[in-house]
Image (cartoon, rainbow, N blue to C red; front, top):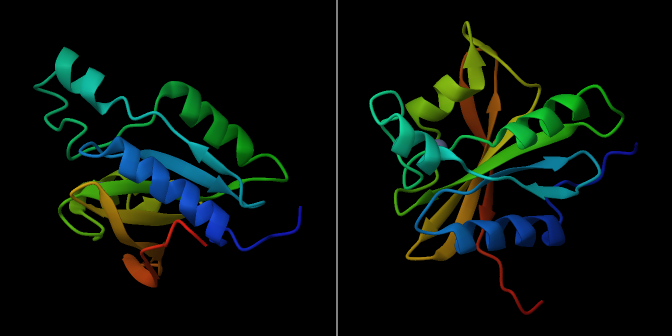
Length: 153
Ligand SMILES: [Zn+2]
């Protein structure tokens, strides 16, 4: 599988649409090496509803992939078209890599998946940009900054 630009305009637009449609909740999904976007299902609200003491966050400020998404992600890593980017959105708080995001991405201080993380900045239902975060060996640092996209070209 030849690596394409996983952030080509079509892929980015698909991610942005997912983020805008999910507002005021967080969306989550991933992008494969061939630039195909998989819109995941954020089950954070169900978790929060059934066990609010354990899952204190709702989908307004948290995300958890559905089991089917996690299976797909894990299987892809053994295939010739692995997931290369995991994305989620931040409604109205800005595209930063939060403490929770870091906890979710790490196990024992090391990244769980060999992927980078895209955080989409949604304000009042409109995507205003996105930031990519990559592991530099010690922490997640912002390596790319994407602007808002115009839908009509
Ligand atoms: Zn986050």
